Length: 198
Image (tube, rainbow, N blue to C red; front, side, top):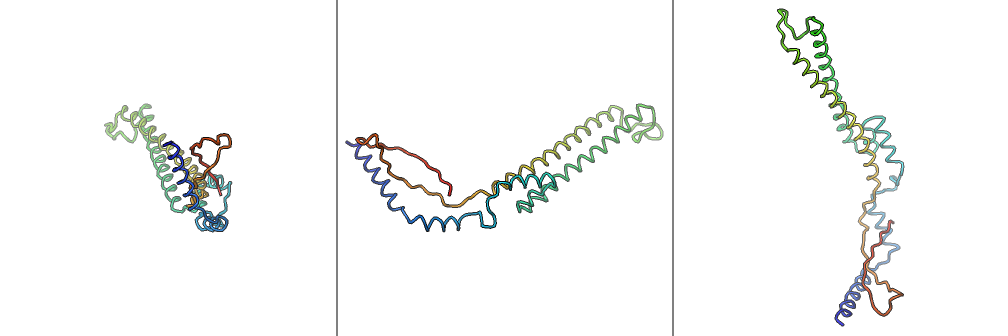
């Protein structure tokens, strides 16, 4: 008996919430959707927008960010790519310098790290160690350049997807009572969730 009273009270509350929350949905919801929607009439959903942004970023780094109208991101992309490219060029030129000196010393010639009196500023082992270090730094620089290039393409594509996402406040919960035609004698309590895109 107690369970039936509790179920009846819960059912009454759910029905009363629905009856107080009911409005004329034809006029109000359309106005609210237009007011709160982030997709303005000149920014209609375009399924090709993410692929265009990725294409522009692949052709010209930072181009996808400019296409998405996120102008402040383009200089960040350029600075990151420029920095990693600078370190690649610097490490590569230093590697070649130490490599040339190493080859000259192995051939018995005077290199730039040997003084006129024959004193070696850097030993042969030092030249070899410097080559290994600079080659590793050069390879890491080119890897970071490629990684930054790919990440800016992915960022432009994801940002183009998210710009088209409707983040309006038109989310609501409307509890309703649904009679189960198979179990008329005993009321049942349940929960169902429906998600509608408008």
